[in-house]
Length: 371
Image 1 (tube, rainbow, N blue to C red):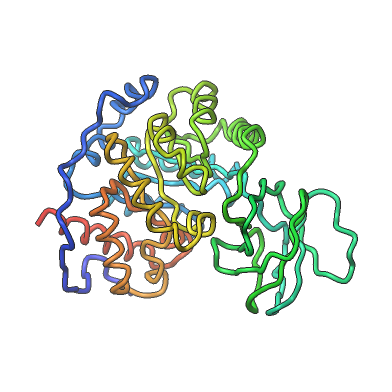
Image 2: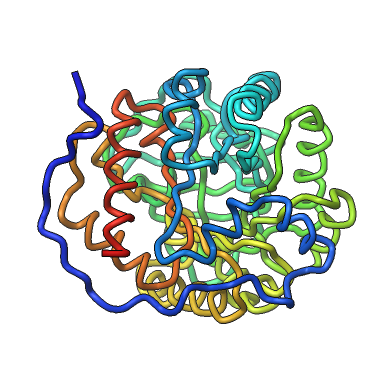
C-alpha cells in the first residue's frame, strides 16, 4: 500500500534563481483577458513563486474519488482528445466540474500529425523496409505497408531519416512521395496502434490543419472545457481563425516543428498559453536544434508574460517507481528556471497505478521552491 503523504527524502539543489513572478500583462489577447479573470486559481498560479501541476486524466484516474484526491494538489486538468471517445470526454469533463466547480479543463485536441492506422501490434525488424502511406495503397506487395490516418506533410529537402512515436523508432529515408514515405528500420521493435510519424523539418498544410481542428471541436461541443490545446501551430493566422470560431476559450499553442519555432514570436503574441511538447519537438527539429528551440520558445513566452507549460516525460520513471531519477529532478529544476508556470503529467497520471504518489511527490517538490 502506498502512503502518499510519506515522501522519500532527496538531496535538493537549486541550479539558479527563478525570475520575478510573472503577472498577466495587458498585452494578452483582448477577447480572452476577461475570461482569465473568471479563473482566480489561474491568476494565483501565474503570480506565485513556483509552478502548478497540470494533470492528464485517463483510465486510472478519471473517477470521482480520484478527482477528489487530485483536487487537493491542483485544479488544472487535461483531457487528451487523441485517446478515448468524445462521449468519454463529455462524461469525465462533467464529473470534474461536478467534483471541483472551480477546476480549469484543457481539452488537448488531435492535430494534423499522421498516425499509424494499425489496430494490432506490428512486428518490425532491423533493416526491414516499410512503407507508410495515406490514400491509395502503394502497389508493392513485397514491402510491408502501413496506412496513415492523415496526409503526409510537405517534406523539405535534405532529410535522411524519419521516426515514429516521438522519435523513439527511427527509419532511414529511402524514398519520399506526396502520399507515402519508404524507409528502412534502424532497430527491432513492436509498433503499437496509432503511433505518430514525424518527418524532420516538414511543413503542414494550414487549411487542412484548420479543418482538422474545427471538425473535432464541432464534435466536442458537449465537452465542458475551458482551454483548447492546439498541436503543431505554425503561424498566428490559424490561431486567429480558431479564436473567431470559438470565442471565450483559452488558446494553448503547442510549438512543435521547425516552422513553428521560426514564427515563435507571432505565435506567442496571438496565444494565451504556450506549451512545449518536447517529444514532437525533438523528432521534428532534430537533436542539434532541440535544446536551442526549447530556450527560444521559453524566452519568447516569458518575455511577453504568457504562461508556459512544460510537457512530455517530466516524471516518466514514476509510472513504475515511488521516486524519480536524478536526471528527472535536474530536468524539473531546469524547466522551473526557464520560467515554466505548469509542469504537465501525461501517462504518469493517465495510465499508471501510482498516479497519486507522483502528484503528491511533485507537489512537495514544487513547494520546496519557496523555501
